[in-house]
Image (cartoon, rainbow, N blue to C red; front, side, top):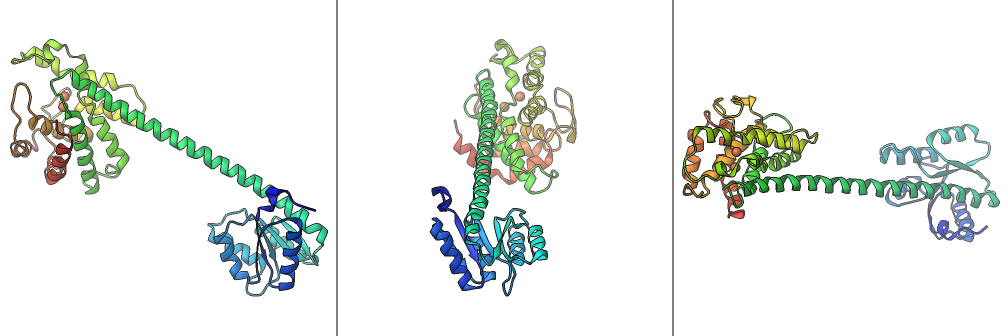
Length: 362
Ligand SMILES: [Fe+2]
Ligand SMILES: [Fe+2]
């Protein structure tokens, strides 16, 4: 019997302590057309060989010194994290009934009897290899498909973040906060989030990179509600009346409405940030007058980084403040306007903040 081209490439390991048996088995298989055969006389060596190589089938003698065939299987399986499936064809004397039961329990797929029946060896080997290669092909397909799904999912995530960012930039066009303000303050927010998380100061999970990425993209949306404020008020050069201020303040709730209703975390957090970035630690902010930790953490972070970037940037109605002046204001207002721990984290990492500022300058 000659094997097919596909089967002839299979990697086969023969383990038998008797050199004569080893040679005989190799000869039978080579005559049938198998090309990749490895043999060993040492049962302990066989464990190492199997774990290092990629064998499609092991012809494993039961009766060997040092380790018997079943012990070899057990050693391989525990080294591989207790896998159930091993492509093992066990070779035993026909009378070893109990051994056969134990070998089946240990996971042997089939048996060959000693003394070897030449007519039986090749068909049994072929049967097992066919099943093994089918299984492998199926597993490969599952693996490829899983990877494709993961990639598609990651792409979708990136696209979502991108859309969130773009929407943030759209809001900028309506405002006189032009340039890279949105990009800068969102990067500052991500950085502060990481610092707070790594210090363990804000509870578990907050420093994880996915949470901080979420804070970063949500921060970019803080003023998206300005899309809904009339130009006459938003772009008015002079002082605003009380009524006009009240209108402007509505950008928090308009933003929450634009971003609301989503079930996905980045969007839900973006809504939170839009709604709460003008709340103040002392409860004097808007729109709800939330106080202290009632204000969600992303909103508290954005309050600090938004004010800082606005202060140190020039506006049509004001010159840019120096970094020192802006930091002095943050420190002065910590505990009143700002969450003190966030100001501390911001100031402690000012060097990194200024690097981002330089990278994204207008
Ligand atoms: Fe705002
Ligand atoms: Fe802003």
